[in-house]
Length: 255
Image 1 (cartoon, one colour):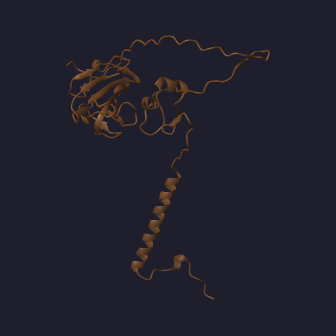
Image 2 (cartoon, rainbow, N blue to C red):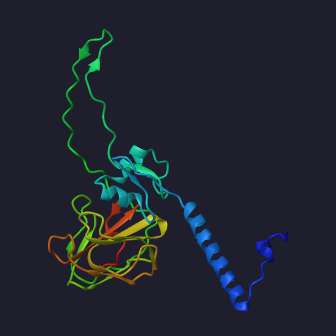
Image 3 (cartoon, rainbow, N blue to C red):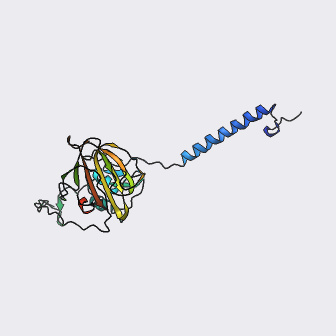
């Protein structure tokens, strides 16, 4: 009895049949490579309540603002050695740890009433810190100054104008945030600059740049608007270094 031919012994009946078989094999290989790539991608499970998983483009300042906390809180709650270094996929606590509950117990085993909390001392604003290695900037908008920096209720300057007026990058840098996820800022653009500086441009009508893009000094990055500004058309402009706000007018030319 003649043995059956192996697949390698089978010859195509025509050149077109051979070409069809090659194309089928190539398609199968492409599907396998795609599935292998997907299998190797990292997957993350859900994060517990009060926590947040770092996404691409996140900054510690942006995460803190989105969760009504300060960068100092996040550093303390997560014992971060370097607040400027967070990694994609890292889970951060964004809510304060739960305090201990129940009455204290004495050495004899009797319950001891918990002491009443002391009345908080009046809040004292820290003295403003001097900016280091300042970089020169240009005015991000041409309108009049509506409100100046005071370090407490206003951590930047508010510049007026008409809806649609151009908003410019105050210095060359990289777009690290472009969106509307931070409450109170509306459509917001944040740029990272040299020497650890960051500038923020809030309440825009339209955002013209994308996260990760590099922008030049004076480049148009947005259009002025009134998103989340209680109906007032303006630009709210902030300058920060490692989370600390500074008076933008110390960086801008005199008017």
